[in-house]
Image (cartoon, rainbow, N blue to C red; front, side, top):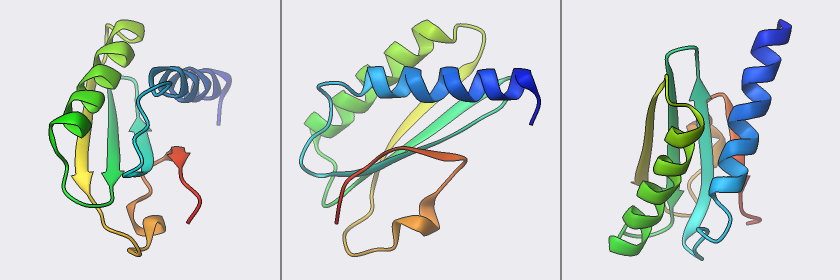
Length: 101
């Protein structure tokens, strides 16, 4: 991994961690992300149905990440992934958040 790749990884992970402050609900099991030079994708994995509160939180996180990466396509998706489903099967490039289970 080159210096530019490490720097992008650092920026993506830190940006998501800041964007998630105050957005984590009890139903959120994990947030996983993948990125490249053109796009950033995140899956927010929820235990139980994703209601308006969860979708709104994901939209807010997406907006904050977009502000930090205006030249990249940013997509944050709210997905249902009930416990005890194996979260490791859902890992993209990295975990940003993962609750203790």
